Image (cartoon, rainbow, N blue to C red; front, side, top):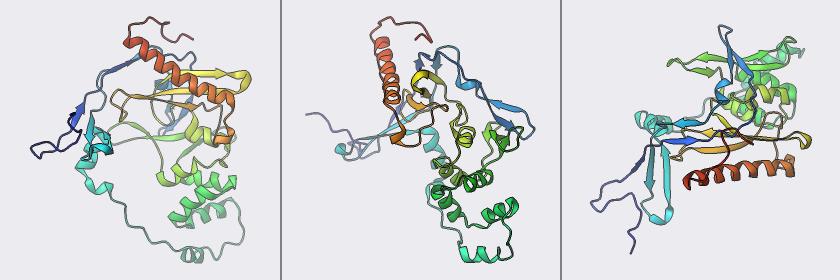
Length: 297
């Protein structure tokens, strides 16, 4: 009889598996889409060069992954990224749900009683007066592009083009550790806002869709059908909870899809193509079957 898989050892001690990920990735992307993502506070530029490597990739030492079997074998197994787990172990209070802050719409409206003429300055002032929970709700529920653009400017620093109206990127800053990170002032509003389909597409592109704006995950595959309007990127997630990394196929920023109903048959063909392509490439590598060189069609 096979011994049940559980994190409880026969001696009553807790057992955990440790994976030390090390893997190579064949780069199958054919095109580069180098763009500016925004600028630091000193106005030096930030671009997405890291997302478009020109050769195959090798990850010698990704984050350790903890493999924990449920005490009850039938409940399966959990994989946890050590970077997340170690940070939470050092500060377990960060896992807690914080107590809600004071929220009173009437109190905030009292502060706005003298506002009679709703120009840009007054509209911006009203956004400031909204209690934070209501600001989050408005970011989710609003169908008014103007409201959403005002909220966007409250949630992060935005870089505008020459017309001072069209966003071309977002602001960046240096973290205490020296990393270049987006200058997002209200992460909760930002996360909700960028998922609202009524935010104008140029704003979606600058804030969340442009390759590189969500991080330096390399694009290792691409499906492009210009005549049918389908364009899909395959992103590599190196430090995934999956010990050998994993791949995510997302619609490209020039093929905006915010509802399942917006996906076309060609979009689905492109998504399936990238998943199958990566599976076959990895299988071929395991079986020592030769296949075309890097970045081949």
